[in-house]
Image (cartoon, rainbow, N blue to C red; front, side):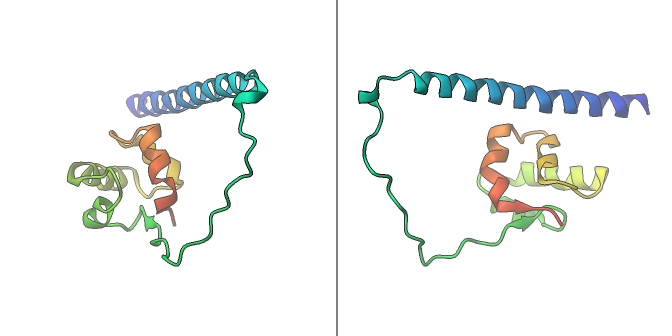
Length: 121
């Protein structure tokens, strides 16, 4: 019982630490960009992308996806797909897509890549 609490507490602390580092990094980047001389900033008009005729594949439901479906996600191989399924079986259904970061092998960076490709229902 206590071990589960400690494990959850560590996971929550890790999650908050990653968010704090990301926030600090964004503050540094935006501060540095605002200090650039005007000649280094872009004066061109923004490029507007036209929608393509290809449709995006439907996001994969983390709570019902098989290992084969999970392996179609970029950066997810057979081992990581099995870890996701094992986490789902041990801890129950994913309640939010962000809980995917609790699976060993899913970093913040990998989650950002997968966020638009997964869903939770």
